[in-house]
Image 1 (cartoon, rainbow, N blue to C red):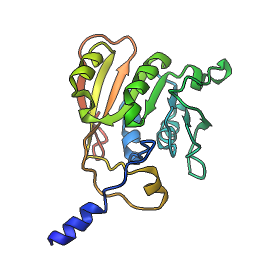
Image 2: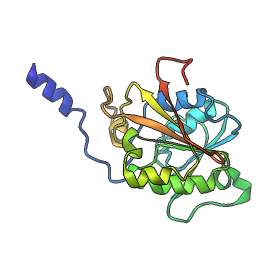
Image 3: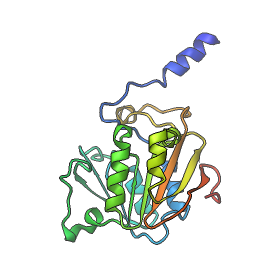
Length: 212
């Protein structure tokens, strides 16, 4: 039994992807868009879209949705929305006014590369018109320096995901491997432009369609 458990645990330990490209369960973004967290938004941009799952969920939920990434990872995947190759944090970002989904999105929703998460958050807060929602490890806010920075931002909500989602590297999903249950805590950090004061907490539950 011990050997079997060891093999099972080992099977879910993946090498770190060099670009921090990890793929969330589909229900994660579906629940966010069903929760009302993006009330008042019409356009949604995911600037680290990977396979396009967040973009697809946004489009299904009725938003005009677009995605970008440093590589066209969404190709050959079933998805809705519009896509382009772009590097969100390099400075070479599309700004043409005839493509407002990139230049002036109402909301930026993303599962960003964790090693660049703070840079993503800072830029997203400059580029989104209304809401920024980033999927990050729950402990991301626990560092002293970051917590002090977060207090200066319009962070409005932190929604914990239940149960823990499995987020394997993109190549694992492309290879057809079925991820098991997650072992790490993740949350959506939601900023609302103009929000003042403390942030609230809550949950996004996979199996509770009424929960926000």
